[in-house]
Image (cartoon, rainbow, N blue to C red):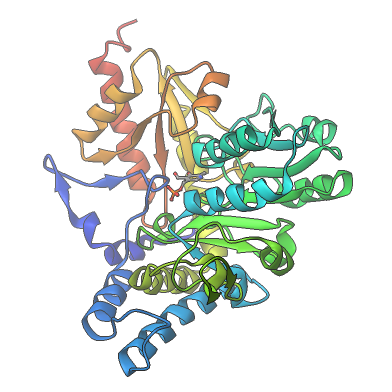
Length: 412
Ligand SMILES: Cc1ncc(COP(=O)(O)O)c(C=O)c1O
């Protein structure tokens, strides 16, 4: 086992007890907990370096600007971007995808064009495209999943043609854990069309090494708060020539070169896409999170996830009446595990687990079309990050046995 148990002490919140039980946090897919270096970096920044960026001739503002731009460099290096200018700071994945839809989408879509999504998209990678399809007359086309909960690549091959202008897919499903093979998908998309490939990396980037130069995507969006960083900041990475070509999706201070009464010109990329005061301390926190993950090593993060997921799938398979929704091949997935338990409502499962200090998510996970495809209203979902270990899975299993017994499932 890739033993990361020593990291647990870096997360003060995990010392908490709920209802007399030490907290077992299994909801990192919703948002991950924060280690001390992230908390301290933001505290230190606010106490000693804080000012607005890119404005002042004074020292504090220069230092704040340097810290903010250093964060951009660190994030660029984390995903191996060719230049820090390819990193746009946004509020999060949702804002990045909405920005892409309302800028690239509006400018490149006409009636008859197609936007290809999959059936396992989060609403953040679905609703923005519905809005843009309505405004442009473009059509949405969905790629189904195989019986193994993987993206149906044959269906993708059959769908991609010159009508397709945008393909936007999750890098890891927040419900099934499925990790579609982006390089292979990129080869199909780029060989059969002139479409751009957008990857929603909200779940992928926090858990796997990502190298945007070999990955095959044209744009990648992700959020700091799922990768041990703060809320309020995320990233849109884009190929430089596409960012250059793209119009800004928001106007305001910071993003202009000149402003006249009737027309303005834009600042160079990335400032062109960062209107208004950016999330400055959050960028500092994100840089600390990136540094923390780099110190562990993203390969080690992935190995830890793989081993813990394999262990969890194995133990969950011992629980009668439990159905797991996601690939059984652990290498095709990440540490996000959705399940149902007989006819017990997932909210009841979550409530019983909560009474033992165990935090899991229950609901549709912002993926209603996927739930409809699975003929489910909701699932319970356990998800991991570096601070979880086998003992957390064992606590989950014990809690599920208690739920079975409370709901009379073990009487038959
Ligand atoms: C796959 C996926 N995409 C997008 C999002 C949206 O991320 P955010 O709320 O940080 O913008 C999430 C959040 O759960 C997600 O899991």
